[in-house]
Length: 151
Image: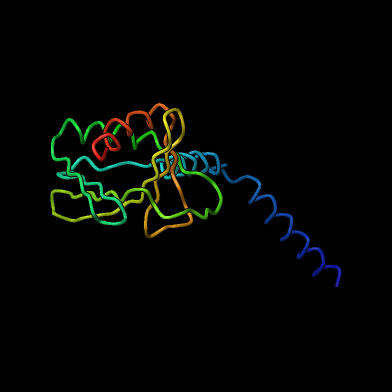
């Protein structure tokens, strides 16, 4: 009986020692996970965009943008958008934003443009519990790019 107890204790001790001597790889994994999660917290428009259009929900007016300079401006504005934590309950969007890529695939976003000096909000229709916000400075650019064309 003493021999079995001694063998069992020896096995447990060796197991504990072998786990304690393993190299610590969790630091590398956490760094990579942090980098990935930081990337997922930002919003971006692909570089292969060939068309961007904005329309009001009532469908009565639509504005199309087809030049590279405007695409670049929108890419800068939306790349600064940051994912907000929590679940949201938003009113109907102020604008629908349709983005067309080189493969002629279209994706839609919902957009609420704040007043001058306020934040703006972006939402993906397939994820209505998550919003991305744009800084007040970028909102001012959005007003110049989008809202002024509708007025």
